[in-house]
Image (cartoon, rainbow, N blue to C red; front, side, top):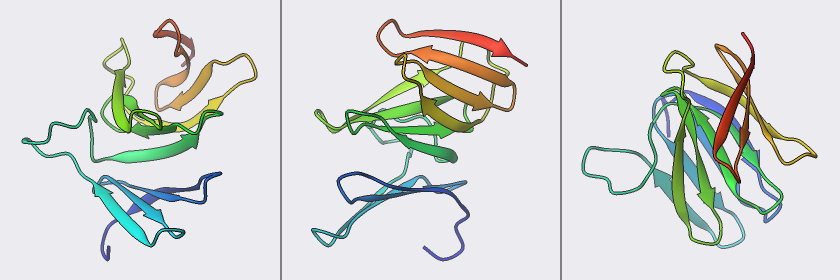
Length: 131
């Protein structure tokens, strides 16, 4: 949509296109089906995502979408359940997640405005490495 400031675009292995906006949530375009869906958090929304201010997108090996945002955390859209999970850093000052990468060891590496963190999805534990 015109006037929105986008931060990241991800083309998935399944051919879908995700767009992350700095102030307007997420968009999902499926060119194969000709469908479009907008994800936007509002006070009455029952979806489990924390923010409308997204910075980064990443697709893991299972096809799940990781979306880093400005509200001290990130969301994961599980492709099996089609539901969002929300995760927040234990340090409230961490802020924005600018980049996400999953290493060969299975850990998520999260580049933030307050240093590098890793996140173990299996144990749900964060580790701060650098500031």
